[in-house]
Image 1 (cartoon, rainbow, N blue to C red):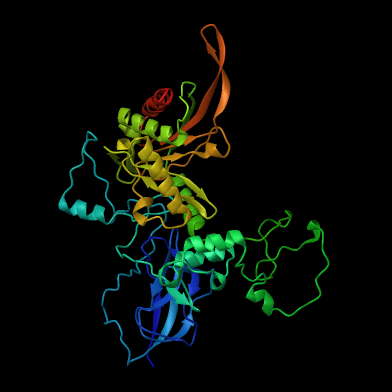
Image 2: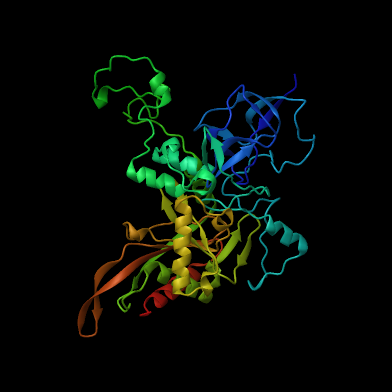
Length: 461
């Protein structure tokens, strides 16, 4: 009997692990080469992983929701000598090299940042150009290394139900039973809209009791206890301690997965590397004519400021002390979701009119919400915008994620009394916070950048 272990490959994200969404087989099943084996969730996508062999499934690494480290065993097979097998040494597009740390956009052997001394147009050798084409294919927050493997998702039939991996993941999140959803897609495929409609109407609710709970023997419920008398238990029911004995803890520990797991890594890495400094001021928008779009005006102001002070529309390689000033403005738009923070890029914002900016922002937000955002749209932005004021808050200290040099945060608009000739007036203002990497630009450059934004926002249109 010849057996083979299949290690979790680099799924094109450059992240050290992925979460199991759904197995398409169980132990004891037979599978053929390149049939879908498992659906895995990474920081931004749900992808199908095909079987590398034909044979019998001997062992699976875990169940739905388990986190598997890249390069460790995902499944074990007994090879079928009479079925197709991939030739030894044949390239599968998978990579099992050492996992690269999060928030490392410019490792020594990876992407290179090249700029002219004057910060003008960048000239590239063929070798440099080739490496830039291999650049990070996108992340949720920040820039990561990735493999060159290109994967396409297809609807897979499981238990007679055909749906894309991302649709299955959304169904789990919304507690929708796909077997009760009427498909509207081609060839009987359940679409994302079908799942959301079923969740809204409540016509396809998943079973209230999970399988694990149903399998437990019935028992008389334990009497309720006061919070002070509760014993902290892990999810497995074993005693645990999350704080010193003298501190009472409530709730259960939750392992971060997918988007939030990546966000935690990137934010910690950015905090450790960037010398962050924040400037704040209020933009007086009293002169605005009716119909002005706040987000559109903020992006226009960022583009105007980037033209006036290019130092903040830049990337910085802290290891090599190399700065790249960009001739174009790609704005990373922070999008908050239940799964975590996404930062898609609005490309060439400096050449878009107001209608083009609004259309682009709407498209990116919609793609983020239904998890259809292309990998190429989640990386390579030159400066970031966080419009947290649409919820609450006045000023902030937003996090600069390398290689970017700056991020603009807009707080909630308010009215304030403003002195004018002859008395006082009530003016509408928008609080702005500009966080910049002080290694790459001076305080004077940041102040001039913020002043250019204030001047543009003060215009009527």
